[in-house]
Image (spheres, helix red, strand yellow):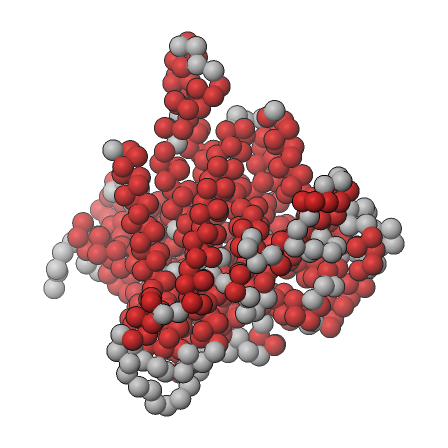
Length: 266
Length: 290
């Protein structure tokens, strides 16, 4: 019974994924004729179409740029707040934390419209800079939550020796809190990477220029263009997902810890 | 100038507070102001309409009510289905072994995909003519169970819920596994000496002991169900037809129809709906756990 349930669910997860990857090497007629079989005549045409006609390399570059800037900045700002939350006396700490907790209860879909107006007025809308900025502010509360949750558990004695030696808060943050919090920082980083890499909402709202699209937005555009040409849609899925899936394969434990920490705290 | 010990730490929080205050909290407050206007989003002038947007959204808007109904159906199916499935998988995989580690990794895998990718996968599963679901049913001789899925007005949103469960059940499973692994082994030993079978062990040990995890899973799943924007747009196209419209897509569509003030009012009600669900859950959790 146990085995049957597990095997069934394993098939439910694996079969669609295998069909997608196999399908990206098939023509549309072949996919419809035999969706489950391996490609009889593997073709790279879909990949050529997706990578050249859709300018996917530029799109990939945009996604990488956004993630490469927004994740480290969010981590830096979030860990500074978390350190303050952990080290401040009771009331200032509570107030600071509560301010960021508001952001956890307010979903992006509820603030996106005034944000659109604001970013438009500041000329930050149709730009990667604006996208990076909005990613940072929207995910800061989650980063603060996860990191403060960890840094609060660090005992004050950890800093005592350093403080006796005359170390200020900055030295304590940089030389003690950050190195000790490494596992928590790694988990937060992975949570943020997955979130920023996969986000559709803000690119859809902010980006008009096709040259500034990120992966999820470019993928959504496929839908209109290729409608039921599934092999091309599948190829888009493979290209967009491969970096995350590869990273997951190598850093599995960190991914599970990170995404779950985000769920627990976010 | 010492207000309290370590006051300089406030400077550490200053950059984050400035950005988050300026680009998140400030627009959130401005949203309340827009909600009382008829602004289209680009004209230089607009009129103040007071609370009429809000009252219209609540009492006189079939599109919004439809989106709210769909959203609540979606939420209910996902919360029940995903929580039950996650708990079942967690119970089956809690014991450490090679096979269970591999299966956990597989079940978690969809979580790292983007919503748009998951949407495209399920678009093909549900395709009425060439899709996996109907071909499998056909091959098994179960033609009468074949369906139009997303094309079927009455059940479309439930099929999206199935895709959402496929997407995130593995993530919730991990939370449950962590909860189960914290249960002291002695409790099971005691139950066994009392002659408890596997179902009774689950009923009297596992289920009560994972209550905190259940509360967490339900709260998170509910919030996630309100945010299912990307998945719906990927499955249904933009804008989604009314059988697949939920609150977040309704707000977005209203906004793209140049009714910014009205969309802001919908956002306010959206927030209220989320707060109400959260409150109800807290009540329910307190009633269950005393």
